[in-house]
Length: 352
Image (cartoon, rainbow, N blue to C red; front, side, top):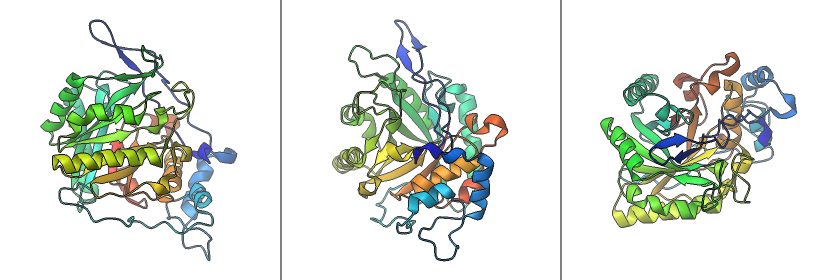
């Protein structure tokens, strides 16, 4: 069920002014967190999380000790997920699984889309340094790779001249953020919210950037409105066929440009956002991260992760932390230690 999850805040819209960048009406300035199924309280979910384990006698399903009832429902009658996910051995130059990526997400022209734009550059990079240090201390055995994750194509509340409800940022912004990343020997991820456009239309224009060895890609189903609905009215989706198209495109680029393997981030906070996930292919030239993107108290975030990352293995696992939304109503933001207790241990950590 998708209703147990705690969706992240939708990105604010941006569009160009005549002389400078200016904020537009957000697609959804504040998406309300979904209610747990059957009105299950966070306290009850946390209790279930503490008591539900894979050691129960003769279960028809199995889930990790950090899982909850959502994982139980997702796995009912299904084989126990296998982690690490079987697949091709990493090629030379692969980032995963040898390193853990810690990324700051957002857009420099908006304080509402994430930490990347919420703070002045020096402060933001200093914050990133502190998170890298915290993760290094929490898990010294896994080197930390810093990253900046830029939303370069932004879903809009207005259709625009072409009717696609999306705005593309130009090369100047990407070059600026790429320069910031180079200051920290960080990776750069380019993320797209396609609106009523398509991933097949939006990805190729980024090829000049993706031809660089330290630039990678993210696709956001939330704003992929394949049925023509205006972004923000409901949650969009991608099918495995869309993800596989991206994998094939990036894999070809790796081969033709003689690049190290690319990393592909797929955002997810409901089951319906990514259909036929079991059909996503594994190509050693593209490392796929299924990224749990929900916000809320730790019990619900564990629930989401167990149900839609652990229960449906793709390749690698990601987890998002929200500096503000995760702390709403007196809740707390999960720590590196908390995330390292999950199964599987996430190798891509994103802060918004």
